[in-house]
Image (cartoon, rainbow, N blue to C red):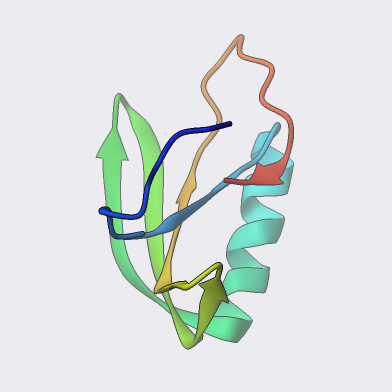
Length: 82
């Protein structure tokens, strides 16, 4: 995209899901590769953060945290890692 991010840290990744069913499934899957370290309500929706047992490295960046927000009603998120 042409944005220089070299001076920034990658603090976490976010796994967006399209449905409540996918949220529950991804929560179970993430629990097998990490530990749930935070569960809060954000805008009335569950927002989970997992610390991975093994960090993810990408283009010189590394993080052990993945956020899993419950999908907002009436929004059409594609299920994807961001």
